[in-house]
Length: 241
Image 1 (cartoon, rainbow, N blue to C red):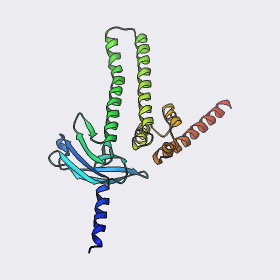
Image 2 (image 1 turned 180 degrees about the vertical axis):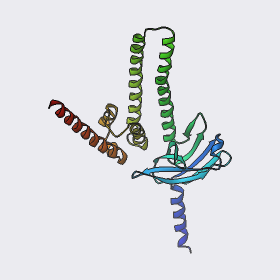
Image 3 (image 1 turned 180 degrees about the horizontal axis):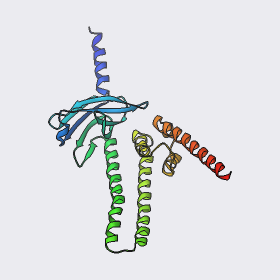
Image 4 (image 1 turned 60 degrees about the vertical axis):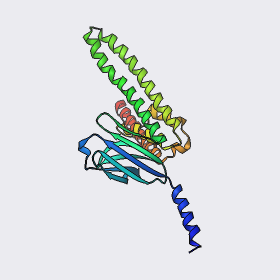
C-alpha cells in the first residue's frame, strides 16, 4: 500500500495539469429553453460532437478536458449557432436577438473582437445602399452618385480585405488563422483562388498552407481553376471555327 501512495500522488499531479475548459452560457431566447446544445468540431469533412448541454431557464454549462485547442461550432440540433474556440479556461457565451458572443479566454476574446470590427465594416458597406437612395431623393445626378459610391465601395472593400488579411497573418500559427480563412472560403460558391485568398496564401508559412482544411481547399480550388481554364480554351476553339 505504501508503494502505491506515490503513484496516487503522481496521478493527482497529472490530473491537475490536464487543460480543462468550462463553458457558462446564457440566453434570453425562450425558444432555446429545454433544447440541447452541442459543441461540434469538423473532422475529415464530418461534424463530430465534443460536448453537449441542455438549456435550463436560459442557462447552460459544459465542462471537460481539452487535449488540444480547437476551432469548434455551437449547434442546436443541426442548426449552426456560432463559432468559438475550445481552449483552456472559463468561457462565457451570450446568445440573444442582438448578440452572439464568446469571451473569457485569449483566443475567443481575440476572435470576437475581430468579428465585432468586421461586422462594423460590413455595416459601412451596407450603408452605401441607403446613402444612394438618400442622394437620389435629394436630386443628385445618377452618374455622379454611381461614381462616388463606387469609389467609396472600393475603399471600404480594400480596407476590409486588408483587415482580414492582417488578422489571419497574425494568427497563422494558431487555430484562428485557419478558422477565419475557412470562414472566408465558405462564402464562395465553390473553391476558387480569389485575389484575396491568393494574397493570404502568398505570405503564409508552410505550417499554415499544410493545415488539413487549408490544403483541402487549395487543392480543390486549383482543380476547379484548371477545369475553368480548360472550358475557356474549348469555348475559344469553338469560336474560331
